[in-house]
Amino acid sequence: MATILAIDHGNRHVKACSSDRFVLLPSSYARPEEFGEDMIKPRKELQVFEFKSHLYPGETYYWGRDVGKAGRIIASYGGEGRYVSKPYQLLSQFTMALLLPDGELTHEDVHVVTGCPSTSKGTELEAEIQRVFRGRHVVTVNGQSKVINVGQVTVLPQPLGTVFYLYYNDEGQVVNRQLEDSYIGIIDIGSGTTDLDGVRELKRQWDDTATIQLGMFDAYKKIAARINRVQPNANVTPQMVEQHLLNPEIDVNTFKINNRSKPVDIANIRTEVFRQLAEEILNRIQQMWVSRSKFDAIYLTGGGAKPLARYFMEWEKDIQILEDSQQGNALGFYRYGLHLAG
Image 1 (cartoon, helix red, strand yellow):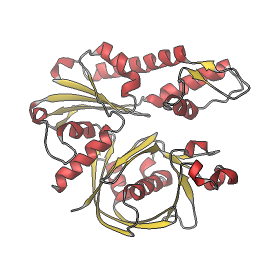
Image 2 (image 1 turned 120 degrees about the vertical axis):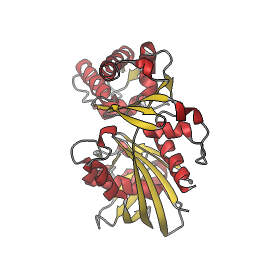
Image 3 (image 1 turned 90 degrees about the horizontal axis):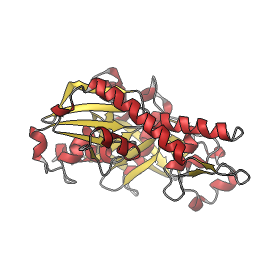
């Protein structure tokens, strides 16, 4: 049986899973020197992995939860040529290496299930993703080399991950046959874009498929600009705002710039910016989905689902928020891969 690797390589985070582990890490890596010599040596205090790839001999990179502590990071953010870019290729390789068990040198017959924006399915962009994953990869993680042979790549429209997450269980077995006779709408709010998909009887409907060029990063940019207006010398970036708002261990209502400056109260700023973003996205959705009544159910998923949920529930009180909204697509990809294998 093939080894299934499910990878949702988003603009801001990589979400991925296999039978061994789940990965949720920033979509960026850094060169070792960007951490400073004193930070890299106590590896146990800095949660990063050391990676090398046969694609770029002699180059070393660090990637992990604490990659944001680097002076400068290299991101795989979306844009023209994303899937042929070096950051996308390297992070995709690093992800595969992390998902596979340690202690094994060669991993044969690997099947990667991944996704693309709805409007990219069936285009040259899908072919580019196929080329990134298919074939032989040699990756070194913390000094241990892994040879990965990917024989099959399945590229799904990203929102279909949500459908398969609901349709299959963790063994790839069908558990929700109601979807076979339903017409559901999927709203997938990511960092850079929002994907819409209408799925009737498990088949995508092109008339209800669209990619909206708005996502959570637009909100982070506006919040950063507001903070910099209050503290002109703060030089706060959208990435700093994102890390702040996604950190469950701190008070997200106040933004601490440094030890010398008074923290900025961003509770009202965050509420206003999130509301505006939700309204802009909803305005585009209403132009696309003129009649909501055609759907038996509408699901909200993606990293922006929970932050914007209250505003979407004002628009559609029966909208369903996916419990594992940020991980849902990757888990759905994995369950679909198991179903194919079974």
